[in-house]
Image 1 (cartoon, helix red, strand yellow):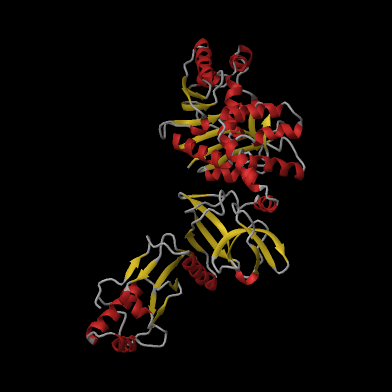
Image 2 (image 1 turned 60 degrees about the vertical axis):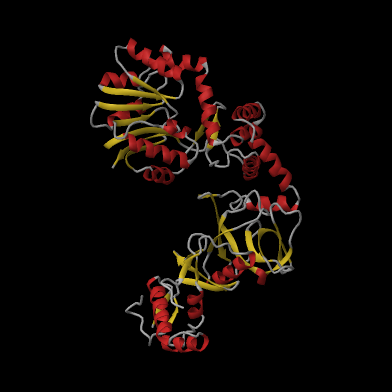
Length: 418
Length: 101
């Protein structure tokens, strides 16, 4: 019985339902989580066939409404992973999100662990395990989940243009209904919504007109320039508009490259600069997807509080990393942001808005402080200096100057690439 | 192949850093990485020889006693059985699956 190696990697081994149950029991006995691939369709769409779940032992605690729990089915003795839809007497009523009926009452001794993480194709799937789980459980109990999932599935397939049209229709209604316009749009839709607003010819004419452009830099913008040690070098202006800021900065001695997602703005900015006897370069790009050569700029400036126009923290941090990439070592990033919650809703109204986002598969990444400013563009109002500083740090920057909110509901910041 | 740290007088037991279960006739071993048993990325089974040895490791028997127990079940030269036991336990201790004491 001689062998050179006694162990085989079980990468291809497919444990049966009872095999997984036995392994999970081993993990529960040790009090450690199990990460394993699951098969089946009873939890679709929140957990799908071949998703990788992390199941954490309950260690004696009671499961909460809406949690997805691994347990031994009392009638079959098999492993099931379903949602808690009610506490009943000494047990819990479970049901798969896609099951035609509940599993029945499951006693405490049959419970093994709670699903704490779902991975699909190498990415975390959060929908179904977060705060919305209680709502899902209630809908499941009322037999309303499947029809709503079907409705969401249909809405998901409608094109961006129809979602934006729906948002515009909602804007024409009352305040709460109006605020739902924000919730029906995904982050990409919100950016496109703002782009459509600014691309309208009367808006281009307004931003590129003499009255705006001749205004030059405002006091709070001059305060930002004061923070820079030199008035020369390569300067990237994001959201250049008609050139109100670009022209005086070029006159100061900067080599200015303007970026805007409206081609007509770039053309107007260049023409206005030429009339003022300075030259600026122009790039048509959406700023959260900024793509310029590495370490090519001394200063990057995101104009007009547009940092608040980037939906979701994840997108803002990814944007900061792109800016970081574009800056030379020691380079500066300047921006302004909106401060304070522009609109306040009651807890009940917030709940309605989030539920609306969930079931239209719209803005599930909604953050408190998000609004459609004047119903024309997305903005996020920051409400915590710590939140803001953490975001800048996550982007790889040191804060050199930060001023918040006086007299305008805005703030300014100068960041340094380290 | 043997491991110099594992001798015939040693007692080998499963490490605290794994979970092992007999599942449908196979010994399934899952290492605990950062406090999680990752059956999706890291899961091991033993071949027939490994399994026969594993089942004799009761935390009481020395490896010599394991060889004795195997000799009663298998018609193989004692030297070969001893080489297998030392080889198996050497490999398992190197992988952190067994600990020798």
